[in-house]
Image (tube, rainbow, N blue to C red; front, side, top):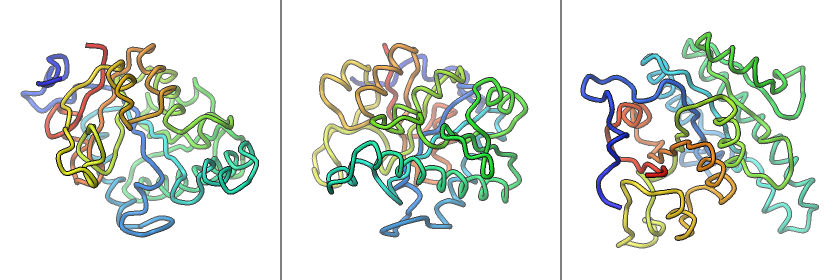
Length: 252
């Protein structure tokens, strides 16, 4: 597809956000920065600042974080571990990342709550939809940890599910590149970048954006997905104003 969708540019001339409530999906790997494992404090701080700039625009923000920087269930299963057990370990890794992000956000002066799909009362709240909605209405950032609480489901699917449950107007996925490409642009020099795509184009072309279950759920919920470069400072806020480089996935 060519030019960006017209619905993507409403109210952008005066710098106002085009959405009032959004979910930001972060991969665990995004928190590593240039490290090979774990968390990079500078990267986590930068992401927290970018989230803060969007909250300052009057946007209600919730977050889903993966755990691939610590443990990935699929790799554990490939190594011979029981898949369900490996996925539960991956869910625990997402809780660690959520707590780290909460700390960075609160150091930046942003009120934050972590809710886990696997109850662990000593560390965070259990996931309760109506409570999460009230937190967001009060201006608090809510970080959803432990995926859906079920094995065999990715954090991409968890992000689409939570965004639908929270009544979000868009799901934003922060990646290593500035949108969706026909192939990995780090490996394929002439990979084509898309400004806009439909859900069906993503599925039919098997584009590596999010898994099929997440795309299908977003389609059913009529939830646009914006894919942008998480590591470019200010890119989150720019996408929220309909500016900068990103790809939008929708029905149109």
